[in-house]
Length: 402
Image (tube, rainbow, N blue to C red):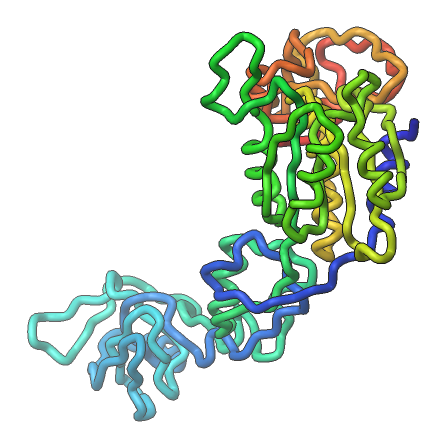
């Protein structure tokens, strides 16, 4: 049985896939950039107005000119091409190119202009020149907009679009296949007897995989039969990670590892000193199956599966995707006393909230690994070191937001 840190080190040793594809900008959220993204244009490409108003020369403002002749107009997508002279102004709108000679925008609220008049009069002092967005203020052509390995957010897509990119080169998403085993497991909605248990975890894990940058290519249920389990594995579509759920404990029908080993997979670790989730295991395929064909076995109890997926499947997907997960650990303050921990690193389900300028965390009194209601209410895992002493309300703990 290895530590959580050693399990992370084993996952970190996996080679990335290094396969790329181009995707449309609108489809790129959550994908991982395969190369640094360079600006194809300068933004703004020219000096542009930051306000609706009138473009004038700085010299006229400096010498206190209070009345201007309006000699033209500039709107976004258009341009006033002449050069401003002394005492002249151009009606200008937000985003329009600033005319040659202009260095200040008088906002329209600071002038009086009679109907059909070509003259404006200042109604407020102007001070220093302003309200102009300078050429390249956001970025210049050739600048690195986003680094390789970035998981793209909606804001990143806006930046990429502004850089004149319609498509982005991203790493392919790791393909994950789930296979749950157990005579008692049936698809959700089909548990018609007391002996049956609806599959409560596959859909949740598939959703998490999508959120973490992977793609679920299969999710299947098999009975407690070695031959059926073996056949189901062989029938899976091509994938990068096979995730068997359950079948890894010490019962008579827990043979998942045995079957995979017989198929040529070699163990990396077989148990982790973690609670919940000790039966979590990891194996790699033989060389003739492809270097990135991996198996990560998760426990069958729902909370155990969700905890170990968060701890181990998420960084494995990140590793295959070609990026390092950001440090998401945070510090929170206990709202109630906490008893001493046992000899395994423990991840308690809790709920954090920002109150009075600090992060408080309440830990559920019920931590049974079969309870889905507790996990549904949780928004974080509270990390406790092996053999950690008891703690009091007001003490600090480490949390992992979900």
